[in-house]
Image (cartoon, rainbow over the protein chains, first blue to last red):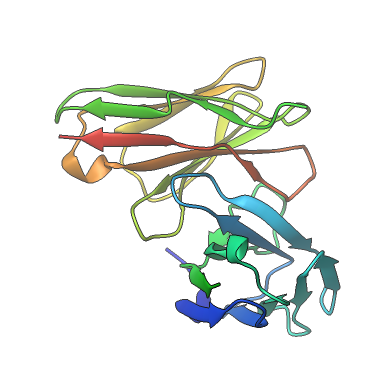
Length: 113
Length: 112
């Protein structure tokens, strides 16, 4: 089925560094969601975006809905060890809110203390 | 405010058996979706229930079926289990008119 292109696939950074990851799609979306998943647990919603150009922050996390409606990025500033996990983007295409979410394959983040 | 809950946490079954997984949505939510997540992969959409009916379905065979009850809780049934059905099964809920889905902790199914 349709999937988003999420990059990078994995990152290994030093504590205190900033992180950036993004998702792109060949079709437009009207909603972008960013999730974090710890091993063996369900994804936790971090940020939801609903309008092209929208920039939303949640603590050290900032996400933007691309102007073209085909991409989104997530930035994490001043990373800490508990940021470790897999980050997923998910998008919903226009056509009513019963349309299923399309998921990226995830960005695995490792933070070296 | 209880979040999404799932039971059981872990389950081990043998090939050919049948399994039922359960989900209670977050308070105030009426739409439940089920996902299968294999190790190292993103969640794969199985189906979505709203008003006790299946509204959307992903690319899963008919061995995967579900049900939603009047209290919005839901069950996922898988018949004739295959080794490849081993995965984390996630339930997510959202409210009417909302796009944000909230996930439960998942049920880890192992088929031997």
